[in-house]
Length: 238
Image (cartoon, rainbow, N blue to C red; front, side, top):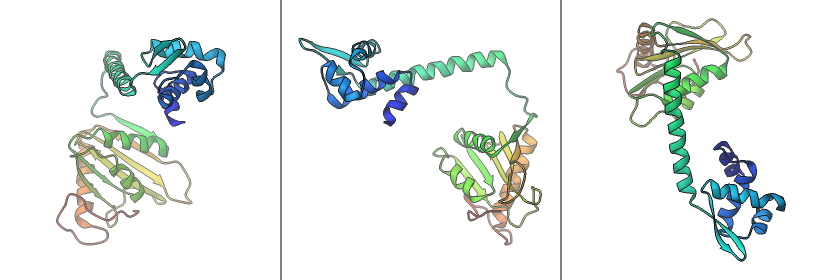
């Protein structure tokens, strides 16, 4: 059950997660019935329900017979969200003390499709004002779905422009908010080698990528220059 997995990710044990979801389904029940519903051994159910009570997820609603009822899942999620946000804030402060932000001119190498795609997704999700990207259609479509509401998107193919990748490779370019960028080279089908690229906050490189993508959008796939728009060019492989 996916709810059990997600509850475990939030810190509950497997038995706690299974008992809580069983309580939600039953409404209120004696421990033995919760154990049957959740598939938990009878000797474990009492301590499991007591731990849920301590977490604020269940409450005793009767003594003879002893019964338990689930407390609000929404309230638990709100508490978990606040706790997670607090932990993120503390981690951000601690990490900032350990090391300063990377120098703007720094360029970091990326190796493998997974690393490249993860950085591209992070940049897209964190965009505040604008994203420009150009390259293969599959990744374009994937990233477009992650774009935050209100962020301006400019995208294009790289057809008809001087190649920025070696033979047997396909380039992908992305720049976010004029602050960060990725230049990636994916290996074409049947080719050899590993996808690779760079990630940088260097303003010169970022603006070069933005200009190149805007030029690609104006030209269109294999055609003359055209007026720029918010979203240009069809999704096609370069």
